[in-house]
Figure 1: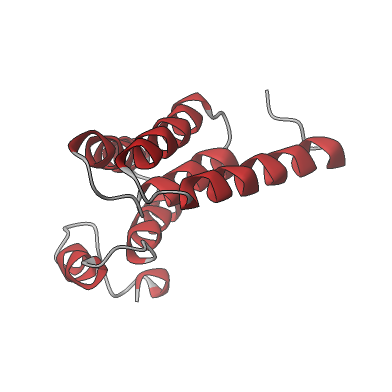
Figure 2: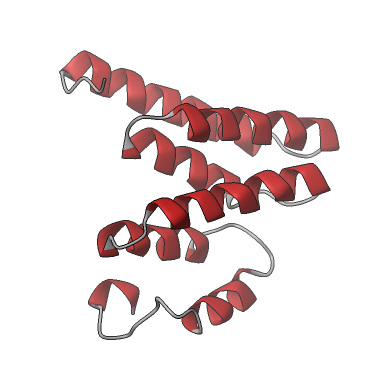
Length: 126
């Protein structure tokens, strides 16, 4: 159950900020593994969009080991599948990938432009 009181909102913001900090410590394979596990756990256990999107935002910028990439790609696929038929959620799916902090993000964006769900008639996707 999501609580909308100030204390609960503040706790979610703090939790997501701490996750972002923890995921930014990613210089070694062990750090990347631990960060991706934390982010994936939050992604899978979240009931609200704020926590789920925060976890996904951290996951999409992770690269390296096969297990880390597998978690990132799985989260993206789950988010996409869950967004079926909801243009606003699908916009978030496109946006989070375009904002990823990865060396090949431009190539990824070029691929997304060819995605069947992408349309320039939606101003949020331009």
